[in-house]
Length: 203
Image (cartoon, rainbow, N blue to C red; front, side, top):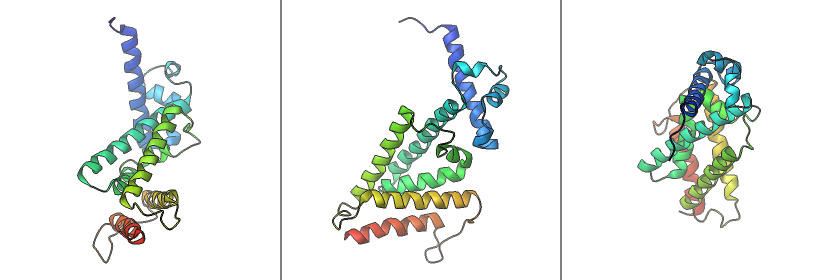
């Protein structure tokens, strides 16, 4: 097998460097601060150099979103390895990631900056969504017995956690504990919401 040329290795290294610099800018300035020119300047290359790897800013941020989703899903896998409840792992990972990396979390859902029709991103999002839905079905096998739509339940849970995450990130809500259980608010919320699924399904 022929060895990759030094030019190929240099280009691969440059792309990695550009993405690393883009994430540094994102973490500091937020999604709107990530531009091709800013990334090139931070990488010490001409503003035209990134064109060899990214057609435009949207493509750059779409590739970043793919990596962000990978990070989030890796945390789901980590949590699932120590918890039996995969649905809870998804929701808790969603919240924790938003608090640890608020600008990255923000970028993932910015359809004005990210191409959600990108084949890889779309496929990864759909796979994650279906896995989440299946985790709810496994948790409450009879949830549809009364005519409920499992996707309505999934949407409600995801939207509630997403909304709470954003309210916390913007400091509209402060970190509090549940007065009844002493748990963190997010943990108490998940216990309440997911527990209701068991009760309703007769589990």
